[in-house]
Amino acid sequence: MIYSSSCSTKIASFTPRLTGIRVITLGEGAIRLKIEKQWEELPPHFKLTASLTSLPHLHPFSRDFLAGTHLDYLHIHLLLGLVSSARSTTTTTSPDPSLLSTAGEMLSLAVEAIILRQNLVNSGTSLVAQYGLPAAGVTSLALLNPSTSAAIAPVTRSRMVQDLSVLVAEMRAGVLIKAGEPNFALFTRATRTIQSLLDSLMVWRPDPDANADLLGCTADFLEGWQTQGGFEPWEFEQGFWEGLAGHPTLVQER
Image (cartoon, rainbow, N blue to C red; front, side, top):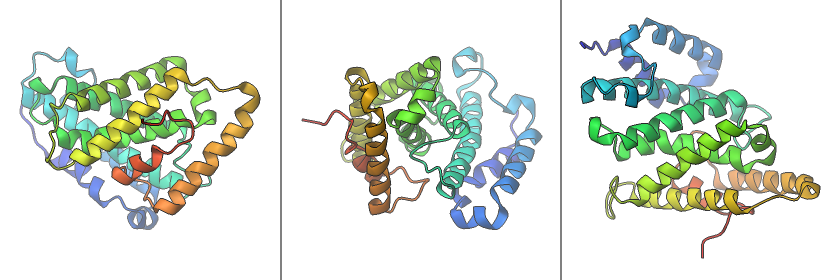
């Protein structure tokens, strides 16, 4: 397979430039149209249309190219969705269906790439930090929000929990990153917070009569946390995971 990276490079180049100022200047719709146009210009054999596990015949570089290009494409849509949510009355604490769908797909692909890292070229800490953690952050917010979580289809919810579990297991194994390496503190904090979320999902059962109080409690916590933390909607750094760890429904670390 011969690759010409001009189209994929154009798609990837939008990611670091997607700030609030750029979105306001060009308009979210205009950026989406441009991204979709560039995506359509990619030859079909440059697009990932099946799982990585179904492509054992491809060279590791080829699979890496397909996964990386698709993750860049999803990442741009995730960033646009986050910026759009931050500017609307519905904040990132309650992701809309399209944003949640993008995050779920992005998380699944990132996790698959991590599992198959021996058959890829680039599937280490940079992939987790750039794609896995942002997708996991949006997914975690959705699972913590009672109103959003209740609307998630059981199969989709099960896949989200499964992907988060695999992500935590891989980060805890110590293969992706070791103490003293860049992003170690970020990975450690994210791992603990996601594990607390998973523990809470396994043991916590809300009282239907208290659901309204829970909604208010969750909304107040997340609104206050975001306001005090001064987070940008596209940032899922250590401060995000530290703040999320204080959510009242999470099983607290001992």
